[in-house]
Image 1 (cartoon, rainbow, N blue to C red):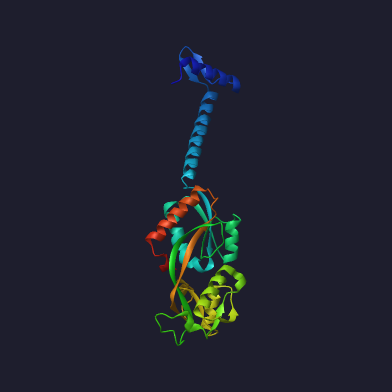
Image 2 (spheres, helix red, strand yellow; image 1 turned 90 degrees about the vertical axis):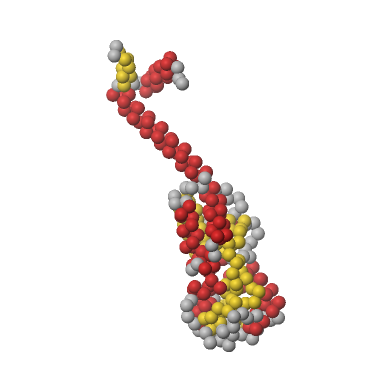
Length: 273
């Protein structure tokens, strides 16, 4: 509690600083002047705004406000964007999200250079990123309708040794192709790649046109409804990951990582799309 004498001294000092009387001190007691009443209204507004600023900072420290930039690999956008954005919006309705869908090379570049905060993608990526696995699903042989193996419940990669293949260009993301090469070597052949395409959707179109076969994760079936058949490859699985820069200290980012990790643990995200 402020002593009466100290309070009077502070008011007098404030009046001198303002160059105006805030109180009339007469026989009927102390009353606000017109200027004093105006000053009190403004002062209360300042105090309220300061309280609001403190509340905003507290919410920011809890990761409840701010903005995050999410980037989705093109082939996982249809699968992951709806449930991820829905879950984050439900938990953090005042957090502003921006999203984009892109190919693997610009996705990794955007995360490493700080243009994006969180990426949803497939490994292998590059060193220096933090990541967590969200889904694991079968890799399938994608065959044209009517192919002799289309009715199988499972095929081995070696059974496709004599087939023409359609694939993405090696320079689209060398780490992926290095992994493919190892799998083809283990199966005992080098694929005869007759045509390349930059996207999974284009690969599916080429398979539907009868130009060859390819391999994609099972959830890619949502990208095309006719002309192709997905048959699981024996013992072949692929992960989907969430990745971010370890030096990103944004509380909102870490709240989002927790929310999406919990979502993946309680929901089969491979069923979305």
